[in-house]
Image (cartoon, rainbow, N blue to C red):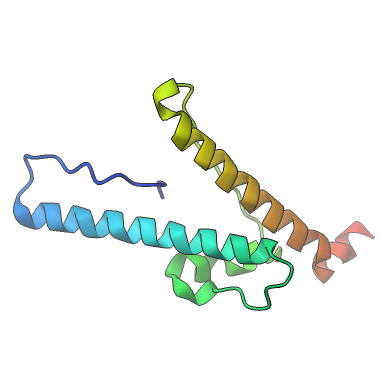
Length: 116
């Protein structure tokens, strides 16, 4: 899955193909947005509800986000100055995800048993 998809649709596509492409990009952005909401909720200690059911992606990742499974995030950043805002945003997202997952994993009973 890619991240922060831009709506750059090639002009050589038919109207139906453009509509499909727009729908795919919209779904990717929606899933990533839901993932961001779940990660923010995991970080916020006062939250009692984590909105895992808001997308298929977050439903699939719920066990891993709660520290009950394994997960890897691969982020791609650019050294280009023109991409600095996107790079900074990506790094912020990765940092929030890391904090949410490691904080939960440290408190998970299954992880505490492994540390013993």
